[in-house]
Image (cartoon, rainbow, N blue to C red; front, side):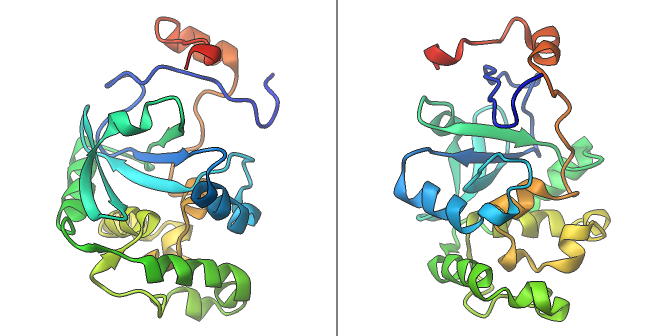
Length: 216
């Protein structure tokens, strides 16, 4: 059995281990922003896997995400390089129709700005913990954010929230999208748990795609 924080390295292959509608998460070890976000949200990292960014897989080549440039379509190859740890999770009960609706909701926000204030507000939530103590506040929009600016996990949570079936998941019933960090989203019941838990399971399913971690 792997250790709690052991990483299993698998080559990304479209249609095999990633597909449209999946939520991607990334972490770049040793960088100020990535490390800072994971430190601030470390109490949410139940799995022991730190993440600092979230995006939506659009197709084999592109993802939709909120970055410093706003809500944009970017190349997934950006995350498939040596510097990133990347994880994909599938929303519960995902179907092609649901994937299309989630992506349409995110595309509708393309061109809108990035919410630096929203990131500050999300981190302030971690300091004052008002939403943890008063559930009614957790459901309200973060006062530092606006309706036309987004940070990464807020955009993904919003797109999922557009589907009535996902609004009933614990995460979106309790928290407004503007109060959901990448780590909180990663750990939520909204997404399927890991389906492959050991190196042996990965080897059986992805034997043709395994890459030695030292070569990644």
